Each structure stands twice: as C-alpha cells, then as structure tokens.
Length: 107
Image 1 (cartoon, rainbow, N blue to C red):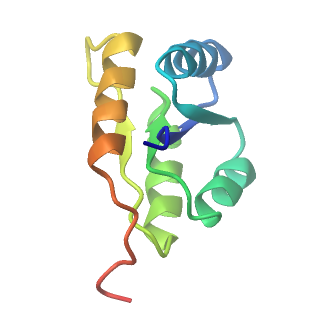
Image 2 (cartoon, rainbow, N blue to C red; image 1 turned 30 degrees about the vertical axis):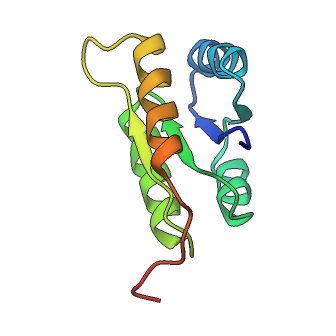
Image 3 (cartoon, rainbow, N blue to C red; image 1 turned 180 degrees about the horizontal axis):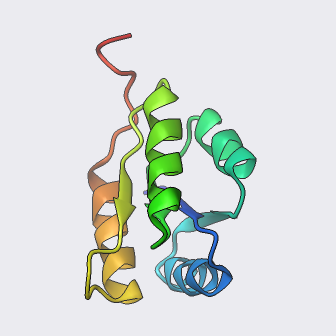
C-alpha cells in the first residue's frame, strides 16, 4: 500500500514541525507549506489525500478555498478545541486512508 500523502499548511512553525514529525513516524509522505502558493502547488499536483490546516482560522479558510478549486476531492481537517496534535494527525491519517482522489462529479 502506498503511504498517504499529507500536506500540513500552517503559519505556525511549531505546529508544522510537530505534525510533520508525527506523520513521518507514521509512514506518511509529508509536505509542509507555510505560504498559500506552496499549498496551491501541492494541491494542484493532484496527489494529496488530505490537508491539515493550522490552528489559525485564516489557515483553514485558505486551505478550504484552494481545496475547493481542485479537480480532485481534497479533505481539509483542522484541530478541534482541546484536540492534541497527536489526535489531529491520527484523524488526518484516518481520512487519508478512506480518501480516493476521484474527479469531482460536478466537473
């Protein structure tokens, strides 16, 4: 089985680093992005199973906007209040495991 491809998009360096480390430990292929252009490029490649958005509300808004423009379905997850980084990483990996990057039916 191919390891899941996950993008961590966050303006917070500690958040990106923590997610990156945990995802790599779990065997995922990880790409980190701190700028909108980096995230757009990663999503545009069409190989992403899930995006983890940082805790900043703007991170989530940008990630959702860019994912909505993609020709493949790209789920965006964000840490819920009180959720640890370990928990968001586990949730993102679960989403990636069920994601099938199919073309959107509306296109």
